[in-house]
Image (cartoon, rainbow, N blue to C red; front, side, top):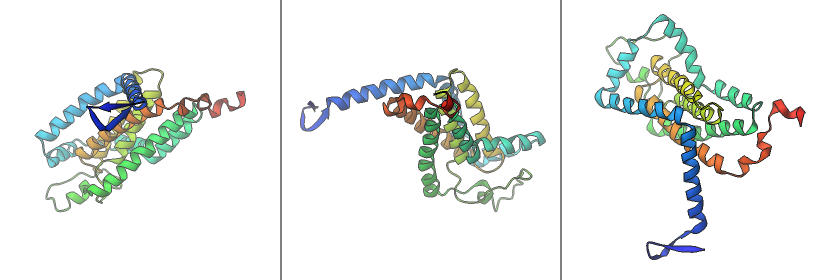
Length: 245
């Protein structure tokens, strides 16, 4: 059955489409509630980040963070940044195969979706990384020892940050204890900060990367969770339980 929209006989909205829209919105609300321990601190920090960006320039924020280096930090953040790398992403997808196939598929598809959005953005924006941006700067920049600092035009948005926040949203969504979202948020935040600390990105690169991941993945897990195909009992299996069937 089709119904008229705003009295316009040339524009119709199907009842079925309307019902699906209401269902999707309902599932979206449920997903947001499920992610609240991650989304609330993230929203607060995002507002703070935007405020800082309005008040201070790119250079001021970069050199402030660049002046906060300390020996332990040079070690910690060199390894922390790898939590947003491809090796960690692939490892988590494989590990989740032993927990539940659905979880592994959700995480893998989330990585794929955000990558398909992020890589074209990098090429379209063509923003220089700090090392390239400050090539002729008279200011002294501290470079963390034993770190390969990239120098290209693929700075915006930060891929490691996108990956880290994608992981955080999905793990919060599938975790039995929702408050784990606070922990995942802090870990993702550590990755984002490490990208600036290591002079791989600017403040706005990681801010945009986090926002992209949170918005896209929140919508994706909502859609994913609304599909009957992905709710099929077969996806509840896992490699760890294969021999028990």
